[in-house]
Amino acid sequence: MIHPMVTLNGNFGVVLEQVLPDDLDDPAFRAQAYDLWFAHGGLLAVRGERLADLSPEKLMEWAENFGAVEQKTQAGREDKTVPGFPILRIGNICHPDGTPAAQFSNVPQLSSDDDIRYNPRTRRPVWHTDSTFRKNPPIGSVFHCRSAPPDGAETLFADMQKAYNALPENERRKLDGLEAICSLAHHDKKINSYSPEYPVLTPEQRAANPPRRVPLALRHPVSDKPALYGLNSSTCAIVPEGQEIKTEDLNLWDLEGVEDDSVMIWRAMLPFVTGPEFTVKWEWQPGDIVVWDNRSTIHSGTGFDADQHTREMWRITLLDAT
Image (cartoon, rainbow, N blue to C red; front, side, top):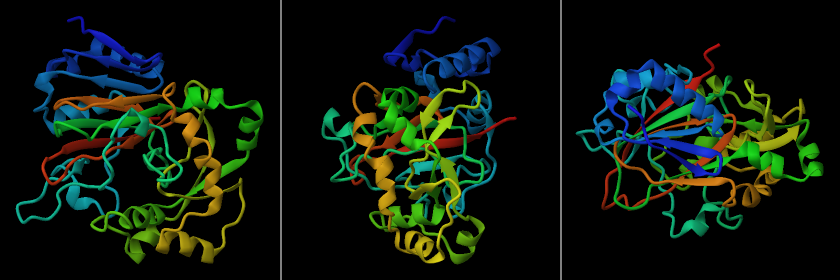
């Protein structure tokens, strides 16, 4: 079957439409999808009405086309996965006893496309790279829509390879030798400050998840193309490579959710690199599956009326298969 193909923003992002569940098993379709994902900046979507009831097994098999599926559940999120699978549920669904069954962040809904560009005053949208706080950060993610509200809850994506190349040369040179300090404890406390139901780490979980260091300019391990990297809600400071961190500073960042002023190095770039020439707004339909490359893109969730509507998304994290 030949699937209609739509590009999203120049060469950034591509959609394959009229996809059936059996297509996801076809080796030729899988090879085409992988090549398109890589050729279009690390952003691929497949869309088809019959994908809405996709089994977790089939979603896992599709994800394995792009990387190794991470089997470990993140600390503090064990009760928010699809039972029996390393698939994180995101949204506002609940268990039968009324407790949250999905990870949920209450963020503002977009009022217009003007809201896509990062606003330094509100610090919205919360553009980020996934899970930079991990020892081996993921190479990407697979996001599958199970149910979507009629309005809102879009996901935003930005091309960080194109954005890096668009920066003035002197700004690119300043990024060399800088690294972001990324802490899961800081990440969770920061989100907890505006979504109180969001869990924070226990002392034991914090000790088991120490901060990590990642470069601000990352060369893609396959293409060797540079991209902006390292922005996450876990990013608590930006320092010269190898600079020692004081315990009292880390305690402030982790336990109070305070972000060091040095992170402004990244935030100062955000209004430019989230401009319309770099970004895509994806409006979800049930069944949609989007795969993004964490090494060459950033993204952001957006809000919806959670009092009136239900949303359920499934997310799989991809690791380097080598």
